[in-house]
Length: 169
Image 1 (cartoon, rainbow, N blue to C red):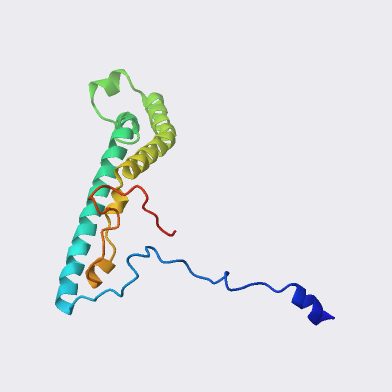
Image 2: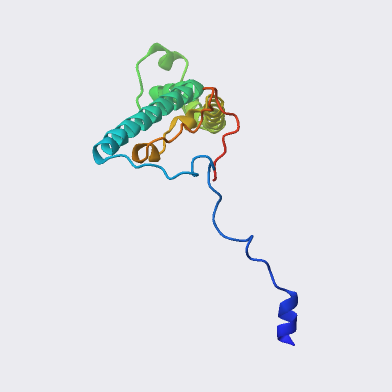
């Protein structure tokens, strides 16, 4: 009786194979040709240099965005620490006339309180700009150094940006 019940519940496993489909069918129709050892090393250096340059540009853009957006926090905390008697106790005229220890403490607390929303704003600004400019599409895969004829992943035939770029994540 158990065999009869099992026959009723047979599952077609041909459609349930693990693995992802190929990334781009046109690239995988023919086997790719490998580069020679010397050419592979030269291309690997070129790809690594290009990826390092793209990383550096992304980092500089992110640092400049964070510096501009977090400038109010930096200024408020700096003046708070500069005029507090237990930290730096500057002899500047504004520290003597305007800021005492309690107001310096208030500036320090205010600076750290407004830092959280400004950090979120800075991260959102950088992510939107990076997505809009497609900065992460500039990184090159290592397969460009190993195989000949690897297509640029973000370009179409006409040299325009491809808006239908898809990746398996």
